[in-house]
Image (cartoon, rainbow, N blue to C red; front, side):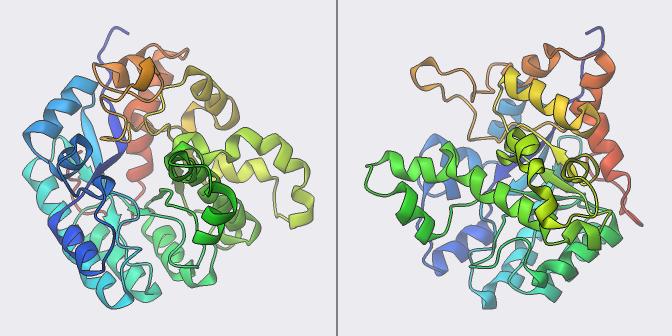
Length: 348
């Protein structure tokens, strides 16, 4: 390309004191993927200054849209979730304000309380200048299509901001049925190896078939991990869609209500398939930092975005320069410019 792409990465994880203290109080296991301990992942999750910026430069990322590591505030007791989400968002806003050229942020949302969730989204957008929120599928046993979330979805549609969904571990019954008794690999299979994506992808389908997008036709959802499996079976699933009584073809929901990013899986095959299904005009970019940074077990190449791979993967994609620019930053700018009465943009 003749001009350097400006790349905005929309799924870049962080943990902050407010959420870590709440997890500890709640007895949540203190794991590295939640920022606890001294492993490289834990240290990188806690860092929002020199190390993170150096790694962004190494990846070739210009702007990181920060979000709390999964499952955000959604695994907290109801009594704590509202205050913790608010404090966490205030801390995120301080980080963005301190370096607005490099950082934006997705709000953490207390989905345990429908009214409080909608109110915190509105505060985050209109007062803190956030471009949307990160959700994590179900809350407790309530899946993403539960009618209790309608108030939140209505607020997102009214505010004209996207909701980025991120997976979390399946419920224990699924863990026991499918991922037990096979040794240490079971936990990985239940989580970021594959189980996460089935768990959230099915929830996307439930949202469609339960009428969420018919009730809120302008609701915009960002799906990471190349569409959480569903995209790769869309033709097949669509064959059965008549049984769901949809108002429009199944594929239409993915080209009108969904935006898709790769979450740091730098697979040319996945990239091409996604572009074929939803079009480059519905694609965003993300690296899933720090979970795809500097890890290449056995030389496996598809989940390491370090040493410039995040940038070269997109620059070398089989698209026109215009399409690459759309994926890199322009689609994100178009999506977030829709916000109703937006706060002056931080990090624009």
